[in-house]
Image 1 (spheres, rainbow, N blue to C red):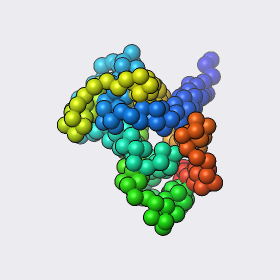
Image 2 (image 1 turned 180 degrees about the vertical axis):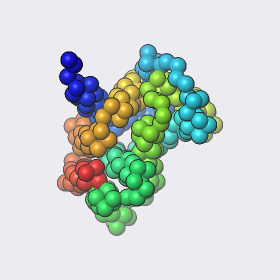
Image 3 (image 1 turned 90 degrees about the vertical axis):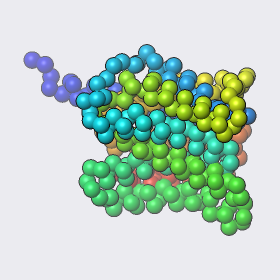
Length: 292
Protein backbone atom coordinates (compact mmCIF):
# COMPACT_ATOMS: atom_id res chain seq x y z
CA UNK A 1 0.00 0.00 0.00
CA UNK A 2 1.44 3.37 -1.02
CA UNK A 3 1.74 6.09 1.65
CA UNK A 4 -0.95 8.71 1.22
CA UNK A 5 1.24 11.66 2.16
CA UNK A 6 4.11 10.99 -0.30
CA UNK A 7 2.75 12.99 -3.25
CA UNK A 8 2.16 16.01 -0.99
CA UNK A 9 5.52 16.24 0.77
CA UNK A 10 7.65 16.20 -2.37
CA UNK A 11 6.01 19.20 -4.08
CA UNK A 12 6.21 21.24 -0.86
CA UNK A 13 9.97 20.77 -0.50
CA UNK A 14 10.36 21.14 -4.24
CA UNK A 15 8.61 24.51 -4.15
CA UNK A 16 10.74 25.76 -1.23
CA UNK A 17 13.94 24.80 -3.01
CA UNK A 18 12.80 26.43 -6.24
CA UNK A 19 11.82 29.62 -4.40
CA UNK A 20 15.22 29.78 -2.65
CA UNK A 21 16.98 29.49 -6.02
CA UNK A 22 14.91 32.40 -7.34
CA UNK A 23 15.59 34.50 -4.24
CA UNK A 24 19.37 34.03 -4.44
CA UNK A 25 19.46 34.90 -8.14
CA UNK A 26 17.19 37.94 -7.75
CA UNK A 27 19.43 39.22 -4.95
CA UNK A 28 22.31 39.40 -7.43
CA UNK A 29 20.32 41.42 -10.00
CA UNK A 30 21.12 44.94 -8.65
CA UNK A 31 24.84 44.13 -8.48
CA UNK A 32 24.91 42.76 -12.04
CA UNK A 33 22.90 45.76 -13.27
CA UNK A 34 25.52 48.08 -11.77
CA UNK A 35 28.26 46.30 -13.73
CA UNK A 36 26.28 46.95 -16.94
CA UNK A 37 25.51 50.59 -16.12
CA UNK A 38 27.38 51.89 -19.18
CA UNK A 39 24.91 50.17 -21.53
CA UNK A 40 21.71 52.05 -22.51
CA UNK A 41 18.88 50.57 -20.40
CA UNK A 42 16.59 49.43 -23.25
CA UNK A 43 19.53 47.87 -25.07
CA UNK A 44 20.52 46.09 -21.86
CA UNK A 45 16.91 44.93 -21.45
CA UNK A 46 16.90 43.43 -24.95
CA UNK A 47 20.20 41.58 -24.36
CA UNK A 48 19.11 40.36 -20.92
CA UNK A 49 15.75 39.02 -22.10
CA UNK A 50 17.34 37.37 -25.15
CA UNK A 51 19.82 35.59 -22.86
CA UNK A 52 16.90 34.57 -20.63
CA UNK A 53 15.03 33.14 -23.62
CA UNK A 54 18.07 31.09 -24.64
CA UNK A 55 18.64 29.91 -21.05
CA UNK A 56 15.07 28.61 -20.75
CA UNK A 57 14.86 27.16 -24.29
CA UNK A 58 15.36 23.52 -23.14
CA UNK A 59 12.14 23.84 -21.12
CA UNK A 60 10.04 24.90 -24.10
CA UNK A 61 7.21 22.63 -25.17
CA UNK A 62 3.86 22.92 -26.88
CA UNK A 63 1.01 24.07 -24.64
CA UNK A 64 -2.64 24.31 -25.70
CA UNK A 65 -3.21 27.94 -24.73
CA UNK A 66 -6.17 28.20 -27.10
CA UNK A 67 -8.23 25.98 -24.79
CA UNK A 68 -7.92 28.64 -22.07
CA UNK A 69 -10.15 31.13 -23.88
CA UNK A 70 -9.54 34.39 -25.72
CA UNK A 71 -9.03 36.42 -22.55
CA UNK A 72 -6.26 34.20 -21.23
CA UNK A 73 -4.65 33.96 -24.68
CA UNK A 74 -4.39 37.74 -24.79
CA UNK A 75 -3.15 37.91 -21.19
CA UNK A 76 -0.44 35.31 -21.81
CA UNK A 77 0.84 36.30 -25.26
CA UNK A 78 0.48 40.08 -24.90
CA UNK A 79 0.14 40.89 -21.21
CA UNK A 80 2.99 38.72 -19.88
CA UNK A 81 5.66 39.94 -22.37
CA UNK A 82 4.66 43.56 -21.68
CA UNK A 83 4.81 42.96 -17.91
CA UNK A 84 8.27 41.38 -18.21
CA UNK A 85 9.47 44.20 -20.44
CA UNK A 86 8.02 46.80 -18.09
CA UNK A 87 9.50 45.20 -14.99
CA UNK A 88 13.02 44.81 -16.37
CA UNK A 89 13.31 48.09 -18.30
CA UNK A 90 11.86 50.33 -15.58
CA UNK A 91 14.09 48.60 -13.03
CA UNK A 92 17.21 49.28 -15.10
CA UNK A 93 16.21 52.89 -15.81
CA UNK A 94 15.22 53.49 -12.18
CA UNK A 95 18.64 52.34 -10.98
CA UNK A 96 20.29 54.88 -13.33
CA UNK A 97 18.26 57.78 -11.95
CA UNK A 98 18.28 56.87 -8.25
CA UNK A 99 20.83 55.24 -5.90
CA UNK A 100 20.99 51.52 -6.74
CA UNK A 101 20.38 50.06 -3.26
CA UNK A 102 17.45 52.39 -2.53
CA UNK A 103 15.84 51.83 -5.94
CA UNK A 104 16.23 48.07 -5.55
CA UNK A 105 14.57 48.23 -2.13
CA UNK A 106 11.58 50.08 -3.59
CA UNK A 107 11.26 47.45 -6.34
CA UNK A 108 11.41 44.63 -3.81
CA UNK A 109 8.19 45.78 -2.19
CA UNK A 110 6.53 43.66 -4.92
CA UNK A 111 5.91 40.62 -2.64
CA UNK A 112 3.53 42.63 -0.48
CA UNK A 113 1.76 43.91 -3.61
CA UNK A 114 1.51 40.31 -4.82
CA UNK A 115 -0.05 39.22 -1.51
CA UNK A 116 -2.60 42.07 -1.66
CA UNK A 117 -3.49 41.24 -5.26
CA UNK A 118 -3.91 37.56 -4.39
CA UNK A 119 -6.15 38.39 -1.41
CA UNK A 120 -8.28 40.69 -3.53
CA UNK A 121 -8.69 38.15 -6.35
CA UNK A 122 -9.55 35.27 -4.01
CA UNK A 123 -11.61 37.00 -1.32
CA UNK A 124 -12.93 40.06 -3.15
CA UNK A 125 -11.52 42.26 -0.39
CA UNK A 126 -8.29 43.15 1.38
CA UNK A 127 -7.63 41.75 4.83
CA UNK A 128 -6.58 44.08 7.62
CA UNK A 129 -3.28 42.22 8.05
CA UNK A 130 -2.51 42.76 4.37
CA UNK A 131 -3.18 46.48 4.55
CA UNK A 132 -1.12 46.88 7.74
CA UNK A 133 1.70 44.89 6.18
CA UNK A 134 1.68 47.14 3.12
CA UNK A 135 1.81 50.25 5.32
CA UNK A 136 4.78 48.83 7.26
CA UNK A 137 6.61 47.86 4.05
CA UNK A 138 6.12 51.23 2.41
CA UNK A 139 7.13 53.02 5.60
CA UNK A 140 10.52 51.37 5.02
CA UNK A 141 10.75 52.98 1.60
CA UNK A 142 9.55 56.27 3.09
CA UNK A 143 12.36 56.08 5.66
CA UNK A 144 14.80 56.39 2.76
CA UNK A 145 12.93 58.84 0.58
CA UNK A 146 11.35 61.37 2.97
CA UNK A 147 14.64 62.71 4.45
CA UNK A 148 16.00 63.16 0.93
CA UNK A 149 12.80 64.93 -0.16
CA UNK A 150 12.85 67.29 2.84
CA UNK A 151 16.46 68.25 2.20
CA UNK A 152 15.77 68.73 -1.50
CA UNK A 153 18.14 65.93 -2.39
CA UNK A 154 15.78 63.85 -4.52
CA UNK A 155 16.03 65.83 -7.73
CA UNK A 156 15.98 63.48 -10.72
CA UNK A 157 15.96 60.53 -8.33
CA UNK A 158 12.19 61.00 -7.89
CA UNK A 159 11.61 59.63 -11.38
CA UNK A 160 13.98 56.75 -10.61
CA UNK A 161 12.05 55.78 -7.49
CA UNK A 162 8.74 56.03 -9.37
CA UNK A 163 10.05 53.70 -12.08
CA UNK A 164 11.35 51.29 -9.42
CA UNK A 165 7.84 51.22 -7.92
CA UNK A 166 6.36 50.62 -11.38
CA UNK A 167 8.71 47.63 -11.71
CA UNK A 168 7.35 46.33 -8.40
CA UNK A 169 3.77 46.53 -9.71
CA UNK A 170 4.78 44.71 -12.91
CA UNK A 171 6.41 41.87 -10.96
CA UNK A 172 3.42 41.58 -8.62
CA UNK A 173 0.96 41.30 -11.52
CA UNK A 174 3.25 38.86 -13.35
CA UNK A 175 3.45 36.64 -10.26
CA UNK A 176 -0.33 36.71 -9.89
CA UNK A 177 -0.82 35.79 -13.57
CA UNK A 178 1.77 33.02 -13.23
CA UNK A 179 -0.25 31.53 -10.39
CA UNK A 180 -3.73 32.17 -11.76
CA UNK A 181 -3.18 31.19 -15.40
CA UNK A 182 -4.94 27.95 -16.42
CA UNK A 183 -1.69 26.71 -18.01
CA UNK A 184 1.86 26.71 -16.66
CA UNK A 185 3.99 29.56 -18.02
CA UNK A 186 7.33 27.73 -17.78
CA UNK A 187 7.02 25.89 -21.13
CA UNK A 188 6.01 29.19 -22.75
CA UNK A 189 8.68 31.32 -21.07
CA UNK A 190 11.30 31.14 -23.88
CA UNK A 191 8.80 32.51 -26.39
CA UNK A 192 7.44 35.10 -23.96
CA UNK A 193 10.96 36.35 -23.19
CA UNK A 194 11.80 36.41 -26.90
CA UNK A 195 8.74 38.55 -27.63
CA UNK A 196 9.67 40.94 -24.79
CA UNK A 197 13.27 41.10 -26.07
CA UNK A 198 12.10 41.97 -29.60
CA UNK A 199 9.89 44.78 -28.26
CA UNK A 200 12.80 46.09 -26.16
CA UNK A 201 15.10 46.01 -29.22
CA UNK A 202 12.56 47.98 -31.24
CA UNK A 203 12.13 50.50 -28.42
CA UNK A 204 15.93 50.83 -28.13
CA UNK A 205 16.23 51.54 -31.87
CA UNK A 206 13.44 54.10 -31.68
CA UNK A 207 14.38 55.87 -28.43
CA UNK A 208 18.11 55.24 -28.00
CA UNK A 209 18.98 55.51 -31.67
CA UNK A 210 20.93 52.33 -32.26
CA UNK A 211 21.20 48.65 -31.48
CA UNK A 212 24.56 47.12 -30.69
CA UNK A 213 25.82 44.46 -28.36
CA UNK A 214 27.48 45.78 -25.20
CA UNK A 215 31.16 45.00 -24.85
CA UNK A 216 33.37 43.54 -22.16
CA UNK A 217 32.08 43.60 -18.60
CA UNK A 218 28.69 45.05 -19.57
CA UNK A 219 28.02 42.21 -22.05
CA UNK A 220 28.94 39.55 -19.49
CA UNK A 221 26.74 41.24 -16.88
CA UNK A 222 23.81 41.42 -19.32
CA UNK A 223 24.15 37.74 -20.19
CA UNK A 224 24.43 36.83 -16.50
CA UNK A 225 21.26 38.82 -15.78
CA UNK A 226 19.43 36.91 -18.50
CA UNK A 227 20.71 33.50 -17.46
CA UNK A 228 20.12 33.99 -13.73
CA UNK A 229 17.61 36.58 -12.42
CA UNK A 230 15.54 36.73 -15.62
CA UNK A 231 15.96 33.16 -16.82
CA UNK A 232 16.48 30.39 -14.29
CA UNK A 233 14.97 32.45 -11.46
CA UNK A 234 11.73 33.06 -13.35
CA UNK A 235 11.38 29.35 -14.12
CA UNK A 236 12.10 28.48 -10.49
CA UNK A 237 9.57 31.06 -9.26
CA UNK A 238 6.87 29.79 -11.61
CA UNK A 239 7.48 26.23 -10.38
CA UNK A 240 7.41 27.39 -6.75
CA UNK A 241 4.08 29.16 -7.21
CA UNK A 242 2.60 26.16 -9.02
CA UNK A 243 3.69 23.55 -6.47
CA UNK A 244 3.70 25.43 -3.19
CA UNK A 245 1.52 27.46 -0.87
CA UNK A 246 1.38 31.13 -1.85
CA UNK A 247 2.09 32.56 1.60
CA UNK A 248 4.94 30.13 2.30
CA UNK A 249 6.61 30.68 -1.07
CA UNK A 250 6.00 34.43 -0.98
CA UNK A 251 7.57 34.73 2.47
CA UNK A 252 10.88 33.43 1.10
CA UNK A 253 11.04 36.38 -1.30
CA UNK A 254 11.06 38.80 1.63
CA UNK A 255 14.78 38.24 2.13
CA UNK A 256 15.65 39.57 -1.34
CA UNK A 257 15.93 43.29 -0.42
CA UNK A 258 18.28 42.56 2.50
CA UNK A 259 20.49 40.23 0.46
CA UNK A 260 20.52 42.61 -2.51
CA UNK A 261 21.51 45.61 -0.37
CA UNK A 262 24.17 43.53 1.39
CA UNK A 263 25.75 42.49 -1.91
CA UNK A 264 25.87 46.10 -3.13
CA UNK A 265 27.51 47.25 0.12
CA UNK A 266 30.06 44.40 0.08
CA UNK A 267 30.92 45.22 -3.54
CA UNK A 268 31.53 48.87 -2.59
CA UNK A 269 28.74 50.13 -4.85
CA UNK A 270 26.58 51.42 -2.02
CA UNK A 271 27.36 53.17 1.24
CA UNK A 272 26.16 51.49 4.41
CA UNK A 273 23.81 53.87 6.21
CA UNK A 274 21.65 52.99 9.20
CA UNK A 275 18.52 53.85 7.23
CA UNK A 276 19.19 51.21 4.57
CA UNK A 277 19.13 48.13 6.87
CA UNK A 278 16.32 49.68 8.92
CA UNK A 279 14.26 50.23 5.79
CA UNK A 280 15.00 46.69 4.58
CA UNK A 281 13.84 45.25 7.90
CA UNK A 282 10.61 47.26 7.70
CA UNK A 283 9.97 46.04 4.14
CA UNK A 284 10.53 42.42 5.18
CA UNK A 285 8.40 42.81 8.32
CA UNK A 286 5.59 44.37 6.28
CA UNK A 287 5.67 41.56 3.72
CA UNK A 288 5.57 38.94 6.48
CA UNK A 289 2.64 40.70 8.16
CA UNK A 290 0.73 40.88 4.87
CA UNK A 291 1.49 37.24 4.06
CA UNK A 292 0.11 36.04 7.39
